[in-house]
Length: 224
Length: 201
Figure 1 (spheres, rainbow over the protein chains, first blue to last red):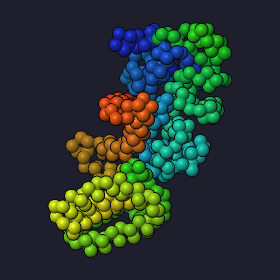
Figure 2 (cartoon, one colour):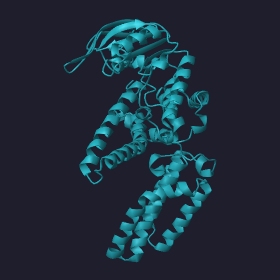
Figure 3 (cartoon, chains in turn purple, orange):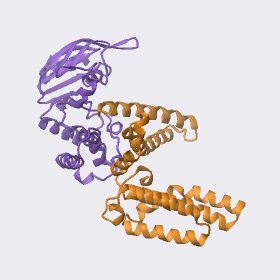
Figure 4 (spheres, each protein chain N blue to C red):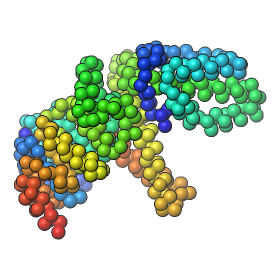
């Protein structure tokens, strides 16, 4: 359960988010909006990468302002650009990175890395330099590096923006299978098919909160 | 690029199976020995030994060449300078020392997974805890340096392409400004990603 209580985020003189109040309990939640509408900031608030100027964000009862480190153990985050989140030279090493940091025994690290790479079709690239992967494979690697930690919540900020149609569809299919609660900020409207709930942001405010079909129709009307 | 990115070449040779600490110690001893060898003949023999080690490792000629290839212009300039200043024998000795030391360091990288190397480095740096330094962060610094080389090279390539497209290939400013800006952006995003992955726990 993720709760936003009268959240305001101000950057310089601009209100990026104004008075957001919402409770996200559904398994699949999408956030859409034009560029600059505040959807990436909303996503970043969930694991404490951004903090509210006023109001509170709580994730599973924990306040992001006070318990960001604990929340990041429960909330995985996938960024738009996979290049910026791959921190180790090779594929397997990058997936193992966060597990090492958490003191997981080596044998278990090896098993979990192997399992997650096999599940998402990257096993044959395990020892390959990460920078040699294609854009779609890099995004899959970024996803593997987060999922290997078995987070309770997965937040994705425009995960398909840099991908071709084939890889976008693959990510969409993977999202449908994940057991985690998934929050996706995106411009990719087909990605939201089958989602439980979609929020539409405009100038820092939630202007629609409905099922995907209704919310997308509202969003299209907003842009027309 | 392989030589600069710490790319491990999978294998099952004796060198692959040696512990990282033993390889690093061996590298230190071999580097010292290279400094002590003073004749081109002795260094020629050392070159044969290095070639033999590469053959034993089974990493392949392409990976071996990738380790020393970035040095070729530097080595040529060093040889030419030494030839003028100190003569042919000294030029051969100095140049061979540098090339062989880099080749040996590359061999360690090619036969050791980065994580194994970092774990070894962390153990070596463990005493740093007593002065308030986190060995994990120190070893991560090294890893990020390796990771950033291909990323920054990629950014530079994109900037060069943009320069060509705009017909300003010769402008240093048109190259440096976007490269610095995009590198700083990358650094920001990387910092955020490290936070998201729990590094600021």
